[in-house]
Amino acid sequence: MLSKRIIPCLDVKDGRTVKGVNFVELRDAGDPVELGAKYALQGADELVFLDITATHEHRKTTIEMVKAVARELNIPFTIGGGIATIADAEALLNAGADKISINSAAVRNPQLIADLAANFGAQFVVLAVDTRNIEGKNKVHLNGGRVITDLETEDWIKQAENMGAGEILLTSMDHDGTKAGFDCKLLKKINEMVNIPVIASGGAGSKAHFVEVFKETDVDAALAASVFHYGEILIPDLKTTLQQSAIPVRI
Amino acid sequence: MENNISDNSKTASSKIGIVNYGAGNLFSLGCALERQNITYGMINKIDDFDLYSHIIIPGVGHAGAAMSKLKASGLSDAIKLLKKPVLGICVGMQLLTAHSEEGNSALLDLFPLQTRLFDKDQHIKIPHMGWNNVDFKDNKLFYNILNLTQFYFVHSYFIEYNPIFDIASAHYGGRFSAAIQKDNFFGVQFHPEKSGAAGEQLLKNFAHLTL
Image (cartoon, rainbow over all chains, first blue to last red):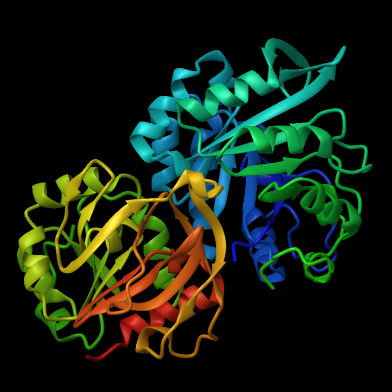
């Protein structure tokens, strides 16, 4: 049976992991390779690296980091941040990335989704969507939620699926950082609307929240950052809890 | 890539040749082999097949496009004549079948099997992406791996389940071929290079496999 995936997300800047990594036993908490390998060993099913600098000058550093990660990691990983062209994506693919996630660049140029899918296959293209509820409507936001667009989240995701996106990474800005649980209502709606995998993001604060999101919605994966980085939730414990709740996981 | 291979490499007992026909993401496969201390090189022309004891056909993306590239590389006929162990991975496995619905493409036809698109009407998401249980028969490829271990899959097309060639199957919508074998030809639909410790064990098993 296909397992539900647990995905730690790491922010990287200039090839180093940043923000909230607090593993005492790590020699170098800023080393994405060491941290990624540690998560893989704990049973993470996949990793997402979000490159928060991702300016043109830093591209080379990112490519080197991706190569270093690919050398060590024996599970799949996605890299996101600043990918705007076929050439950007190809460099990351050749460096060993299994998937790329695109966000703002796709909003500015939706054709990018179709072009990436045609060149590398839909399975390579993750569309990341940051959404916030504004006066009853779900609106796509950019730049980590700071910039609102005219796009309604449901319409944008449907369009992206039709254009060839292979997976949706949906972050609820209303829930992100609250540790009050995932946005199950929205995730359920989106998940029932599309026929591609959906990754839930934003709001994880406890193991019960993961149980809840998989029970109440049929999303394929759940992503979190700080609860894993600070050791508030340990992946083996989480997997055991999910298994006890009859949710299929890889142990 | 390896134009200056010396003669002593020809006598290497176990060395994997990766068919280099433009299939993408060879880097991850190479890294996985390196982690297992398995020596490997690239096969760019027909003569290169002689340099290696075991052959891997990688593959991601579109099966029809992959077959066109493989034909253009001039390596496809030589692959069909190989007598040493060959392992097709993902689309590389699908290339071993007769035909794919992806691009309505005629393939290598080493297995009289069809590669088909998953059926949306079965209420499954496409692609099939993630870790799924692999139910295998007693086979050298799965030596030292527990039955029903999960491997990482990512594919929209699948090889129909068949009792003759399947050495492993998995379920998604219905039962499909997770691994096949016919004589010296093996194929796995999952990605051993991304399937954690079990995937690494499988690559090691293949590298040491004798027929």
